[in-house]
Length: 98
Length: 466
Image (cartoon, rainbow over all chains, first blue to last red):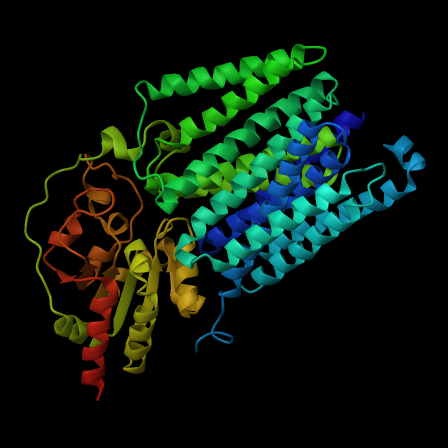
Protein backbone atom coordinates (compact mmCIF):
# COMPACT_ATOMS: atom_id res chain seq x y z
CA UNK A 1 0.00 0.00 0.00
CA UNK A 2 2.78 2.40 0.89
CA UNK A 3 4.33 2.12 -2.58
CA UNK A 4 0.93 2.81 -4.11
CA UNK A 5 0.46 5.84 -1.87
CA UNK A 6 3.74 7.21 -3.22
CA UNK A 7 2.46 6.62 -6.73
CA UNK A 8 -0.53 8.83 -5.88
CA UNK A 9 1.84 11.51 -4.57
CA UNK A 10 3.75 11.38 -7.88
CA UNK A 11 0.53 11.71 -9.87
CA UNK A 12 -0.97 14.53 -7.81
CA UNK A 13 2.30 16.46 -7.69
CA UNK A 14 2.55 16.15 -11.46
CA UNK A 15 -0.91 17.63 -12.01
CA UNK A 16 -0.23 20.33 -9.45
CA UNK A 17 2.92 21.41 -11.26
CA UNK A 18 1.08 21.53 -14.56
CA UNK A 19 -1.80 23.57 -13.11
CA UNK A 20 0.38 26.04 -11.22
CA UNK A 21 2.36 26.95 -14.33
CA UNK A 22 -0.39 27.05 -16.90
CA UNK A 23 -1.59 30.47 -15.71
CA UNK A 24 1.79 32.21 -15.89
CA UNK A 25 2.20 35.13 -18.32
CA UNK A 26 5.10 34.96 -20.77
CA UNK A 27 6.84 37.89 -19.10
CA UNK A 28 7.45 35.76 -16.02
CA UNK A 29 8.72 32.65 -17.78
CA UNK A 30 12.40 33.28 -17.14
CA UNK A 31 12.00 34.17 -13.45
CA UNK A 32 9.68 31.21 -13.11
CA UNK A 33 12.14 28.80 -14.68
CA UNK A 34 14.67 30.18 -12.27
CA UNK A 35 12.18 29.89 -9.41
CA UNK A 36 11.38 26.26 -10.15
CA UNK A 37 15.13 25.71 -10.44
CA UNK A 38 15.39 27.06 -6.90
CA UNK A 39 12.58 24.80 -5.64
CA UNK A 40 14.31 21.62 -6.77
CA UNK A 41 17.26 22.85 -4.71
CA UNK A 42 15.45 21.01 -1.90
CA UNK A 43 17.61 18.13 -3.14
CA UNK A 44 20.01 19.62 -0.55
CA UNK A 45 17.88 18.00 2.14
CA UNK A 46 18.22 14.62 0.45
CA UNK A 47 21.97 15.11 0.17
CA UNK A 48 22.17 15.87 3.89
CA UNK A 49 20.29 12.71 4.83
CA UNK A 50 22.44 10.65 2.46
CA UNK A 51 25.70 12.11 3.79
CA UNK A 52 24.47 11.78 7.37
CA UNK A 53 24.01 8.06 6.86
CA UNK A 54 27.32 7.55 5.05
CA UNK A 55 29.96 5.38 6.71
CA UNK A 56 32.45 7.79 8.37
CA UNK A 57 35.25 5.28 7.73
CA UNK A 58 34.67 5.12 3.97
CA UNK A 59 36.30 8.05 2.13
CA UNK A 60 34.45 7.26 -1.13
CA UNK A 61 31.06 7.52 0.55
CA UNK A 62 32.08 10.71 2.32
CA UNK A 63 33.35 12.25 -0.90
CA UNK A 64 30.16 11.47 -2.83
CA UNK A 65 27.99 12.67 0.04
CA UNK A 66 30.04 15.85 0.36
CA UNK A 67 29.55 16.49 -3.37
CA UNK A 68 25.81 15.89 -3.07
CA UNK A 69 25.42 18.41 -0.23
CA UNK A 70 27.73 20.97 -1.86
CA UNK A 71 25.93 20.81 -5.22
CA UNK A 72 22.52 20.85 -3.56
CA UNK A 73 23.41 23.89 -1.45
CA UNK A 74 24.74 25.71 -4.52
CA UNK A 75 21.55 24.89 -6.43
CA UNK A 76 19.39 26.27 -3.63
CA UNK A 77 21.44 29.37 -2.83
CA UNK A 78 22.21 30.31 -6.43
CA UNK A 79 18.66 29.63 -7.56
CA UNK A 80 17.30 31.86 -4.81
CA UNK A 81 19.67 34.77 -5.48
CA UNK A 82 19.12 34.99 -9.22
CA UNK A 83 15.34 34.55 -8.92
CA UNK A 84 15.06 37.18 -6.24
CA UNK A 85 17.23 39.59 -8.21
CA UNK A 86 15.09 39.20 -11.31
CA UNK A 87 11.79 39.54 -9.50
CA UNK A 88 12.97 42.53 -7.49
CA UNK A 89 13.08 44.45 -10.76
CA UNK A 90 9.46 43.87 -11.69
CA UNK A 91 7.79 47.06 -10.71
CA UNK A 92 4.52 48.50 -11.77
CA UNK A 93 3.81 52.16 -12.27
CA UNK A 94 3.42 52.72 -8.53
CA UNK A 95 6.76 51.46 -7.34
CA UNK A 96 8.74 51.92 -10.51
CA UNK A 97 10.39 54.62 -12.50
CA UNK A 98 7.23 56.67 -12.98
CA UNK B 1 6.79 4.70 8.17
CA UNK B 2 4.64 4.46 11.32
CA UNK B 3 7.04 1.95 12.89
CA UNK B 4 9.84 4.47 12.40
CA UNK B 5 7.72 7.17 14.01
CA UNK B 6 7.26 5.27 17.26
CA UNK B 7 10.98 4.51 17.33
CA UNK B 8 12.00 8.12 16.64
CA UNK B 9 9.29 10.61 17.68
CA UNK B 10 11.34 13.44 16.15
CA UNK B 11 10.66 11.98 12.69
CA UNK B 12 7.01 12.93 13.12
CA UNK B 13 8.04 16.51 13.71
CA UNK B 14 10.42 16.50 10.74
CA UNK B 15 7.80 15.10 8.41
CA UNK B 16 5.25 17.64 9.61
CA UNK B 17 7.78 20.35 8.80
CA UNK B 18 8.42 18.83 5.35
CA UNK B 19 4.68 18.80 4.73
CA UNK B 20 4.46 22.50 5.49
CA UNK B 21 7.51 23.14 3.30
CA UNK B 22 5.91 21.34 0.35
CA UNK B 23 2.74 23.42 0.74
CA UNK B 24 4.72 26.67 0.85
CA UNK B 25 6.76 25.67 -2.24
CA UNK B 26 3.57 25.15 -4.24
CA UNK B 27 2.04 28.40 -2.96
CA UNK B 28 5.29 30.18 -3.75
CA UNK B 29 5.33 28.92 -7.32
CA UNK B 30 1.69 29.94 -7.62
CA UNK B 31 2.52 33.44 -6.35
CA UNK B 32 5.29 33.67 -8.95
CA UNK B 33 2.60 33.52 -11.63
CA UNK B 34 1.74 37.21 -11.26
CA UNK B 35 4.16 40.13 -11.39
CA UNK B 36 2.52 41.66 -8.32
CA UNK B 37 3.04 38.70 -5.99
CA UNK B 38 6.05 37.08 -7.67
CA UNK B 39 8.69 38.43 -5.34
CA UNK B 40 6.69 37.45 -2.27
CA UNK B 41 6.47 33.95 -3.73
CA UNK B 42 10.20 33.42 -3.97
CA UNK B 43 10.78 34.88 -0.51
CA UNK B 44 8.26 32.43 1.01
CA UNK B 45 9.92 29.56 -0.82
CA UNK B 46 13.27 30.81 0.53
CA UNK B 47 12.08 30.62 4.14
CA UNK B 48 10.64 27.15 3.46
CA UNK B 49 14.02 26.05 2.12
CA UNK B 50 15.80 27.29 5.23
CA UNK B 51 13.23 25.55 7.44
CA UNK B 52 13.65 22.27 5.54
CA UNK B 53 17.43 22.47 5.88
CA UNK B 54 17.35 23.26 9.61
CA UNK B 55 14.92 20.50 10.63
CA UNK B 56 16.91 17.95 8.64
CA UNK B 57 19.78 18.34 11.11
CA UNK B 58 17.50 16.62 13.65
CA UNK B 59 17.14 13.50 11.47
CA UNK B 60 17.79 10.57 13.81
CA UNK B 61 21.06 8.64 13.62
CA UNK B 62 22.95 11.00 11.32
CA UNK B 63 26.71 11.50 11.43
CA UNK B 64 29.36 13.51 9.57
CA UNK B 65 27.91 16.86 10.66
CA UNK B 66 31.23 18.68 10.30
CA UNK B 67 31.54 17.69 6.67
CA UNK B 68 27.87 18.52 6.10
CA UNK B 69 28.14 22.04 7.49
CA UNK B 70 31.35 22.64 5.50
CA UNK B 71 29.70 21.51 2.25
CA UNK B 72 26.65 23.71 2.88
CA UNK B 73 28.85 26.69 3.73
CA UNK B 74 31.04 26.38 0.62
CA UNK B 75 28.15 25.68 -1.76
CA UNK B 76 26.02 28.50 -0.39
CA UNK B 77 28.73 31.13 -0.30
CA UNK B 78 30.11 30.39 -3.78
CA UNK B 79 26.68 30.31 -5.40
CA UNK B 80 25.42 33.33 -3.45
CA UNK B 81 28.36 35.52 -4.42
CA UNK B 82 28.37 34.45 -8.07
CA UNK B 83 24.60 34.91 -8.28
CA UNK B 84 24.84 38.42 -6.83
CA UNK B 85 27.60 39.48 -9.20
CA UNK B 86 26.33 38.14 -12.51
CA UNK B 87 25.00 40.63 -15.08
CA UNK B 88 21.34 40.38 -16.05
CA UNK B 89 22.25 39.49 -19.63
CA UNK B 90 24.16 36.44 -18.34
CA UNK B 91 21.24 35.17 -16.27
CA UNK B 92 20.33 32.21 -18.54
CA UNK B 93 23.67 30.48 -18.14
CA UNK B 94 23.56 30.99 -14.37
CA UNK B 95 20.17 29.28 -14.25
CA UNK B 96 21.69 26.51 -16.37
CA UNK B 97 24.67 25.95 -14.09
CA UNK B 98 22.67 26.02 -10.83
CA UNK B 99 20.24 23.59 -12.39
CA UNK B 100 23.11 21.32 -13.40
CA UNK B 101 24.30 21.31 -9.80
CA UNK B 102 20.87 20.14 -8.65
CA UNK B 103 20.97 17.32 -11.19
CA UNK B 104 24.47 16.42 -10.04
CA UNK B 105 23.29 16.35 -6.43
CA UNK B 106 20.46 13.97 -7.33
CA UNK B 107 22.87 11.70 -9.21
CA UNK B 108 25.33 11.82 -6.30
CA UNK B 109 22.59 10.78 -3.86
CA UNK B 110 21.88 7.74 -6.04
CA UNK B 111 25.61 6.96 -6.25
CA UNK B 112 25.95 7.16 -2.47
CA UNK B 113 22.97 4.91 -1.88
CA UNK B 114 24.53 2.36 -4.25
CA UNK B 115 27.92 2.68 -2.53
CA UNK B 116 26.24 2.06 0.84
CA UNK B 117 24.45 -0.99 -0.61
CA UNK B 118 21.19 0.47 0.64
CA UNK B 119 19.17 0.13 -2.57
CA UNK B 120 16.88 -2.87 -2.31
CA UNK B 121 13.84 -4.06 -4.20
CA UNK B 122 12.96 -3.63 -7.87
CA UNK B 123 10.87 -0.45 -7.50
CA UNK B 124 13.42 1.44 -5.42
CA UNK B 125 16.31 0.31 -7.62
CA UNK B 126 14.49 1.24 -10.81
CA UNK B 127 13.74 4.73 -9.53
CA UNK B 128 17.28 5.14 -8.20
CA UNK B 129 18.70 4.17 -11.60
CA UNK B 130 16.28 6.37 -13.54
CA UNK B 131 16.92 9.32 -11.27
CA UNK B 132 20.67 8.81 -11.56
CA UNK B 133 20.47 8.65 -15.36
CA UNK B 134 18.30 11.76 -15.67
CA UNK B 135 20.27 13.66 -13.02
CA UNK B 136 23.61 12.86 -14.67
CA UNK B 137 22.35 13.96 -18.08
CA UNK B 138 21.01 17.18 -16.53
CA UNK B 139 24.36 17.78 -14.82
CA UNK B 140 26.71 17.33 -17.77
CA UNK B 141 24.21 18.78 -20.26
CA UNK B 142 23.80 21.92 -18.16
CA UNK B 143 27.56 22.31 -17.90
CA UNK B 144 27.76 22.27 -21.72
CA UNK B 145 24.86 24.74 -21.96
CA UNK B 146 26.65 27.03 -19.52
CA UNK B 147 29.92 26.77 -21.46
CA UNK B 148 28.15 27.62 -24.72
CA UNK B 149 26.24 30.64 -23.44
CA UNK B 150 29.27 31.89 -21.57
CA UNK B 151 31.26 31.72 -24.80
CA UNK B 152 33.75 29.15 -23.50
CA UNK B 153 32.57 26.67 -26.10
CA UNK B 154 31.97 28.50 -29.35
CA UNK B 155 30.97 26.04 -32.00
CA UNK B 156 28.13 23.60 -32.23
CA UNK B 157 29.61 20.46 -33.72
CA UNK B 158 27.98 17.23 -34.65
CA UNK B 159 29.50 13.80 -34.64
CA UNK B 160 29.12 11.82 -37.82
CA UNK B 161 25.94 9.78 -37.33
CA UNK B 162 25.12 11.88 -34.28
CA UNK B 163 21.65 10.43 -33.77
CA UNK B 164 23.02 6.89 -34.00
CA UNK B 165 25.63 7.65 -31.34
CA UNK B 166 22.94 9.16 -29.11
CA UNK B 167 20.78 6.08 -29.42
CA UNK B 168 23.72 3.72 -28.80
CA UNK B 169 24.82 5.63 -25.69
CA UNK B 170 21.28 5.76 -24.36
CA UNK B 171 20.80 2.05 -25.02
CA UNK B 172 24.12 1.26 -23.32
CA UNK B 173 23.14 3.26 -20.25
CA UNK B 174 19.70 1.64 -20.12
CA UNK B 175 21.21 -1.86 -20.54
CA UNK B 176 23.59 -1.25 -17.65
CA UNK B 177 20.69 0.14 -15.65
CA UNK B 178 18.67 -3.01 -16.27
CA UNK B 179 21.64 -5.14 -15.19
CA UNK B 180 21.89 -3.11 -11.97
CA UNK B 181 18.18 -3.46 -11.32
CA UNK B 182 18.27 -7.20 -12.05
CA UNK B 183 21.28 -7.98 -9.84
CA UNK B 184 20.92 -9.06 -6.21
CA UNK B 185 23.77 -6.71 -5.23
CA UNK B 186 24.81 -4.46 -8.13
CA UNK B 187 28.32 -4.92 -9.49
CA UNK B 188 30.31 -1.77 -8.72
CA UNK B 189 31.95 -1.72 -12.18
CA UNK B 190 28.47 -1.72 -13.71
CA UNK B 191 27.45 1.20 -11.51
CA UNK B 192 30.57 3.19 -12.42
CA UNK B 193 30.20 2.45 -16.15
CA UNK B 194 26.56 3.44 -15.91
CA UNK B 195 27.36 6.85 -14.44
CA UNK B 196 30.13 7.48 -16.99
CA UNK B 197 27.83 6.64 -19.90
CA UNK B 198 25.06 8.84 -18.48
CA UNK B 199 27.42 11.80 -18.11
CA UNK B 200 28.79 11.35 -21.65
CA UNK B 201 25.24 11.12 -22.97
CA UNK B 202 24.42 14.52 -21.45
CA UNK B 203 27.43 16.09 -23.19
CA UNK B 204 26.80 14.45 -26.56
CA UNK B 205 23.12 15.42 -26.52
CA UNK B 206 23.81 19.09 -25.78
CA UNK B 207 26.95 19.84 -27.79
CA UNK B 208 25.30 19.90 -31.27
CA UNK B 209 22.55 22.29 -30.20
CA UNK B 210 22.94 25.89 -31.38
CA UNK B 211 22.74 28.95 -29.18
CA UNK B 212 19.30 29.91 -30.44
CA UNK B 213 17.78 26.67 -29.18
CA UNK B 214 19.51 26.81 -25.81
CA UNK B 215 16.52 28.20 -23.86
CA UNK B 216 14.47 25.15 -24.73
CA UNK B 217 17.32 22.89 -23.69
CA UNK B 218 17.88 24.65 -20.37
CA UNK B 219 14.19 24.45 -19.62
CA UNK B 220 14.14 20.76 -20.54
CA UNK B 221 17.15 20.02 -18.33
CA UNK B 222 15.43 21.95 -15.52
CA UNK B 223 12.45 19.62 -15.83
CA UNK B 224 14.86 16.66 -15.89
CA UNK B 225 16.48 17.72 -12.64
CA UNK B 226 13.05 18.04 -11.05
CA UNK B 227 12.18 14.47 -12.05
CA UNK B 228 15.54 13.17 -10.84
CA UNK B 229 15.07 14.89 -7.48
CA UNK B 230 11.58 13.42 -7.17
CA UNK B 231 12.84 9.91 -7.90
CA UNK B 232 15.74 10.11 -5.46
CA UNK B 233 13.19 11.44 -2.95
CA UNK B 234 11.40 8.12 -3.30
CA UNK B 235 14.65 6.22 -2.78
CA UNK B 236 15.30 8.17 0.43
CA UNK B 237 11.65 7.98 1.50
CA UNK B 238 11.51 11.78 1.62
CA UNK B 239 8.14 13.23 0.53
CA UNK B 240 9.44 16.83 0.44
CA UNK B 241 11.84 15.86 -2.35
CA UNK B 242 9.15 13.90 -4.16
CA UNK B 243 6.59 16.71 -4.15
CA UNK B 244 9.00 19.55 -4.96
CA UNK B 245 10.82 17.49 -7.60
CA UNK B 246 7.75 16.23 -9.41
CA UNK B 247 6.01 19.62 -9.31
CA UNK B 248 9.08 21.14 -10.98
CA UNK B 249 9.33 18.21 -13.38
CA UNK B 250 5.75 18.71 -14.55
CA UNK B 251 5.83 22.50 -14.68
CA UNK B 252 9.23 22.46 -16.39
CA UNK B 253 7.92 20.11 -19.05
CA UNK B 254 4.98 22.42 -19.73
CA UNK B 255 7.25 25.46 -19.84
CA UNK B 256 9.52 23.67 -22.31
CA UNK B 257 6.56 22.90 -24.55
CA UNK B 258 5.40 26.52 -24.43
CA UNK B 259 8.85 27.74 -25.46
CA UNK B 260 9.28 25.20 -28.21
CA UNK B 261 5.85 26.14 -29.54
CA UNK B 262 6.72 29.84 -29.53
CA UNK B 263 9.80 29.05 -31.61
CA UNK B 264 7.93 26.66 -33.88
CA UNK B 265 10.57 24.05 -33.09
CA UNK B 266 9.16 20.78 -31.75
CA UNK B 267 11.32 19.50 -28.89
CA UNK B 268 12.33 16.46 -30.94
CA UNK B 269 13.61 18.81 -33.68
CA UNK B 270 15.62 20.86 -31.22
CA UNK B 271 17.42 17.76 -30.00
CA UNK B 272 17.83 15.84 -33.23
CA UNK B 273 18.15 18.43 -36.04
CA UNK B 274 19.72 21.70 -34.95
CA UNK B 275 18.94 24.74 -37.11
CA UNK B 276 22.65 25.45 -37.44
CA UNK B 277 23.01 22.28 -39.50
CA UNK B 278 21.38 21.34 -42.77
CA UNK B 279 18.37 23.65 -42.49
CA UNK B 280 20.26 26.96 -42.54
CA UNK B 281 20.85 28.83 -45.76
CA UNK B 282 17.44 27.99 -47.23
CA UNK B 283 14.87 30.53 -48.26
CA UNK B 284 14.29 32.60 -51.34
CA UNK B 285 16.68 35.39 -52.29
CA UNK B 286 15.28 38.76 -51.28
CA UNK B 287 14.74 41.48 -53.88
CA UNK B 288 15.34 45.18 -53.37
CA UNK B 289 17.82 47.21 -51.41
CA UNK B 290 18.30 48.42 -47.88
CA UNK B 291 17.51 52.12 -47.47
CA UNK B 292 19.39 54.07 -44.88
CA UNK B 293 18.06 56.76 -42.55
CA UNK B 294 19.93 59.27 -40.39
CA UNK B 295 19.41 59.71 -36.66
CA UNK B 296 17.76 63.11 -37.19
CA UNK B 297 15.11 61.81 -39.60
CA UNK B 298 14.47 58.84 -37.36
CA UNK B 299 14.03 61.19 -34.40
CA UNK B 300 11.60 63.36 -36.36
CA UNK B 301 9.57 60.35 -37.50
CA UNK B 302 9.07 59.26 -33.92
CA UNK B 303 8.73 62.68 -32.31
CA UNK B 304 5.78 63.57 -34.53
CA UNK B 305 4.18 60.13 -34.53
CA UNK B 306 1.14 59.37 -32.41
CA UNK B 307 2.02 55.76 -31.74
CA UNK B 308 5.42 54.04 -31.67
CA UNK B 309 5.95 50.34 -31.01
CA UNK B 310 9.46 49.33 -29.98
CA UNK B 311 10.60 45.79 -30.80
CA UNK B 312 13.70 45.08 -28.73
CA UNK B 313 15.91 42.09 -29.43
CA UNK B 314 18.93 40.50 -27.88
CA UNK B 315 21.20 42.86 -29.82
CA UNK B 316 19.85 45.73 -27.73
CA UNK B 317 20.59 43.89 -24.50
CA UNK B 318 24.11 42.99 -25.57
CA UNK B 319 24.79 46.63 -26.40
CA UNK B 320 23.41 47.55 -22.95
CA UNK B 321 21.12 50.05 -24.65
CA UNK B 322 17.94 49.39 -22.69
CA UNK B 323 18.55 52.38 -20.40
CA UNK B 324 18.97 54.70 -23.40
CA UNK B 325 15.86 53.22 -25.00
CA UNK B 326 13.87 53.94 -21.85
CA UNK B 327 15.25 57.47 -21.69
CA UNK B 328 14.12 58.01 -25.28
CA UNK B 329 10.70 56.48 -24.49
CA UNK B 330 10.14 58.87 -21.59
CA UNK B 331 11.13 61.81 -23.77
CA UNK B 332 8.75 60.79 -26.55
CA UNK B 333 5.94 60.29 -24.05
CA UNK B 334 6.51 63.78 -22.69
CA UNK B 335 6.03 65.01 -26.25
CA UNK B 336 2.69 63.19 -26.35
CA UNK B 337 3.66 60.09 -28.29
CA UNK B 338 2.23 56.77 -27.16
CA UNK B 339 5.12 54.32 -26.85
CA UNK B 340 4.81 50.60 -26.06
CA UNK B 341 7.12 47.62 -26.20
CA UNK B 342 6.39 44.44 -28.15
CA UNK B 343 8.16 41.33 -26.92
CA UNK B 344 8.47 38.15 -28.91
CA UNK B 345 8.26 35.04 -26.70
CA UNK B 346 11.85 34.13 -27.52
CA UNK B 347 13.34 37.63 -27.49
CA UNK B 348 16.47 37.51 -25.41
CA UNK B 349 17.75 34.09 -24.59
CA UNK B 350 14.82 32.71 -22.71
CA UNK B 351 11.11 33.54 -22.76
CA UNK B 352 10.69 36.54 -20.52
CA UNK B 353 14.39 37.36 -20.48
CA UNK B 354 13.77 40.58 -22.41
CA UNK B 355 11.12 41.61 -19.89
CA UNK B 356 13.67 41.22 -17.13
CA UNK B 357 16.19 43.34 -19.02
CA UNK B 358 13.62 46.08 -19.66
CA UNK B 359 12.46 45.92 -16.05
CA UNK B 360 16.07 46.46 -15.01
CA UNK B 361 16.09 49.68 -17.03
CA UNK B 362 12.93 50.80 -15.22
CA UNK B 363 10.28 50.11 -17.87
CA UNK B 364 6.97 49.39 -16.06
CA UNK B 365 5.44 46.08 -17.10
CA UNK B 366 2.17 47.80 -18.14
CA UNK B 367 4.03 49.09 -21.21
CA UNK B 368 5.24 45.66 -22.29
CA UNK B 369 3.05 43.49 -24.49
CA UNK B 370 3.15 39.89 -25.71
CA UNK B 371 2.98 38.84 -29.32
CA UNK B 372 -0.73 37.99 -29.21
CA UNK B 373 -1.64 41.21 -27.43
CA UNK B 374 0.22 43.55 -29.74
CA UNK B 375 0.20 42.01 -33.20
CA UNK B 376 -3.13 43.60 -34.13
CA UNK B 377 -1.81 47.06 -33.21
CA UNK B 378 1.07 47.31 -35.66
CA UNK B 379 -1.23 48.41 -38.49
CA UNK B 380 -2.27 51.45 -36.42
CA UNK B 381 1.28 52.34 -35.40
CA UNK B 382 3.10 55.15 -37.15
CA UNK B 383 6.51 53.76 -36.40
CA UNK B 384 7.82 50.32 -35.47
CA UNK B 385 11.31 50.68 -34.06
CA UNK B 386 13.23 47.41 -34.29
CA UNK B 387 16.37 47.37 -32.16
CA UNK B 388 18.72 44.42 -32.42
CA UNK B 389 15.96 41.98 -33.37
CA UNK B 390 15.98 40.02 -36.60
CA UNK B 391 14.29 36.65 -37.09
CA UNK B 392 11.35 37.54 -34.84
CA UNK B 393 10.26 40.27 -37.27
CA UNK B 394 11.09 38.45 -40.51
CA UNK B 395 7.93 38.39 -42.65
CA UNK B 396 9.33 35.38 -44.56
CA UNK B 397 8.10 33.32 -41.63
CA UNK B 398 4.57 34.10 -42.83
CA UNK B 399 5.07 33.93 -46.58
CA UNK B 400 8.11 31.97 -47.75
CA UNK B 401 7.61 28.21 -47.45
CA UNK B 402 11.26 27.48 -48.21
CA UNK B 403 12.54 29.64 -45.35
CA UNK B 404 13.97 27.71 -42.40
CA UNK B 405 11.83 29.76 -40.05
CA UNK B 406 8.58 29.38 -42.03
CA UNK B 407 5.64 29.03 -39.67
CA UNK B 408 7.34 30.64 -36.67
CA UNK B 409 5.03 33.20 -35.06
CA UNK B 410 6.50 36.66 -35.64
CA UNK B 411 5.80 40.23 -34.62
CA UNK B 412 4.15 41.93 -37.62
CA UNK B 413 6.39 44.99 -37.51
CA UNK B 414 6.25 45.20 -41.31
CA UNK B 415 2.58 46.29 -41.11
CA UNK B 416 3.44 49.58 -39.39
CA UNK B 417 3.37 52.81 -41.45
CA UNK B 418 7.12 53.17 -41.09
CA UNK B 419 9.70 50.71 -39.86
CA UNK B 420 13.04 51.83 -38.46
CA UNK B 421 15.60 49.10 -37.91
CA UNK B 422 18.62 49.82 -35.75
CA UNK B 423 21.35 47.52 -36.95
CA UNK B 424 25.12 47.29 -36.74
CA UNK B 425 25.78 46.60 -40.41
CA UNK B 426 24.40 44.96 -43.51
CA UNK B 427 24.93 41.32 -42.47
CA UNK B 428 22.28 38.70 -41.93
CA UNK B 429 22.87 38.39 -38.17
CA UNK B 430 22.86 35.59 -35.63
CA UNK B 431 20.97 32.90 -37.52
CA UNK B 432 22.29 33.71 -41.00
CA UNK B 433 18.79 33.95 -42.46
CA UNK B 434 18.06 36.84 -44.86
CA UNK B 435 15.36 39.19 -43.55
CA UNK B 436 12.82 40.46 -46.09
CA UNK B 437 11.75 43.22 -43.69
CA UNK B 438 15.02 45.08 -44.21
CA UNK B 439 14.29 45.47 -47.93
CA UNK B 440 10.68 46.64 -47.72
CA UNK B 441 9.45 49.90 -49.20
CA UNK B 442 8.51 51.39 -45.79
CA UNK B 443 11.65 50.23 -43.98
CA UNK B 444 14.59 52.48 -43.16
CA UNK B 445 17.83 51.28 -41.60
CA UNK B 446 19.61 53.23 -38.92
CA UNK B 447 23.14 51.87 -38.85
CA UNK B 448 25.26 51.82 -35.71
CA UNK B 449 25.37 50.15 -32.34
CA UNK B 450 22.08 50.40 -30.46
CA UNK B 451 23.73 52.42 -27.69
CA UNK B 452 25.16 55.04 -30.03
CA UNK B 453 22.24 55.19 -32.50
CA UNK B 454 19.61 55.70 -29.78
CA UNK B 455 21.91 58.18 -28.07
CA UNK B 456 21.95 60.28 -31.24
CA UNK B 457 18.18 60.00 -31.64
CA UNK B 458 17.79 61.28 -28.06
CA UNK B 459 19.92 64.34 -28.85
CA UNK B 460 17.77 65.16 -31.89
CA UNK B 461 14.47 64.60 -30.06
CA UNK B 462 15.73 66.92 -27.32
CA UNK B 463 16.58 69.58 -29.88
CA UNK B 464 13.10 69.35 -31.40
CA UNK B 465 11.36 69.66 -28.03
CA UNK B 466 12.97 72.95 -27.08
